Length: 423
Ligand code: ASP
Ligand code: MG
Image (cartoon, rainbow, N blue to C red; front, side, top):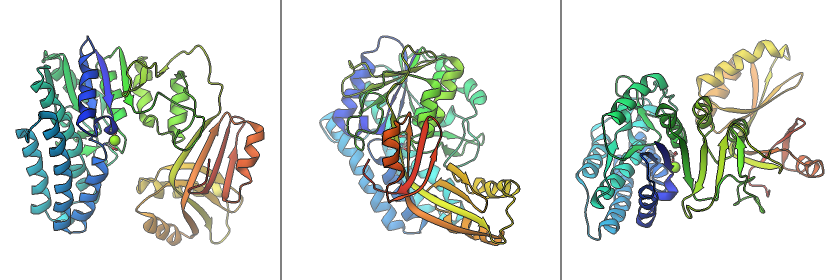
């Protein structure tokens, strides 16, 4: 058994779907396929959610119509005539119902998020499964909400691998189809309430499926040649890294490299399952592989840029700085609001944190103020990490005018700066 994962870009239109189906069809062993929402559907559904949550129901329905039109267009192109499979009509109706029937103030934002945004993956997988059947490629569509059990941390749920294991194995072992198709990104609580596991989480879904099924390998199909030493859209002369260890990959993903979701490596490392990153535009290209032992260590600097950062500087108003004692309070507050901290730097009188953008910034600031801290937040920042930096380069990055904070270890240089700088 192998696991293949296809991201949104690979199924953004009918040609993409055909290509993905050809790749799946060319494998001669059993395959479990994890697929994301088509193209930018997840963003579009987030738009529907915003309107719904602000009680702009008409606007939400209009946005939903655009999403349905996009999917219908892909379907019509795939079949050569207007056709909407039953399951798709059913999902459209469920979405319309959620918007029209429910009062958004009845549930927390995060719960609505999962309920609405999860349909992107339900739609894409159902369309692809049906289309494969129409081409007589035997496959089974699996609703991952019945397999992946998560906690109830909505919008950022964790998969309970042990409980999920039993459920997934039962379904896989009781079916005979050579191709199994499931959604990335989604799951459900034990009570059956839909959850999502964080943006770009489909890689993690694929890794968990791979670990549970003891897959021979997991392949993530992307629109790039493999893992490069920088985002080619930002860093010129980006080079392919053919082999990485799990630890290399975890560090890269943690620093914000948009190659693979940071959680992906652990389940695979535990079972020593290799992870391939392949290009869906040309399946014969070698790509990159992440595994336990590699022959040649990485010998190029790696550039990682993390967008949408806030630099927050926190200082006790009374200058009573026994910082260590205050750390726990500060992080408890951040944890409560699900804030991701990417860099920490302390001085005698303050603590600087580079955090992911959060919609709760105002609340967090108020809580810190109430607890006796003064807070300065600088939004619109970005965090550049260079692993294996070259000394001559370092200074140029550190001294640029837009830089607010730098941090250095022997191996790693990190720079917090105003967003939108040239690499
Ligand atoms: N569709 C979700 C997203 O765009 C999950 C994923 O693609 O991994 O974030
Ligand atoms: Mg996606």
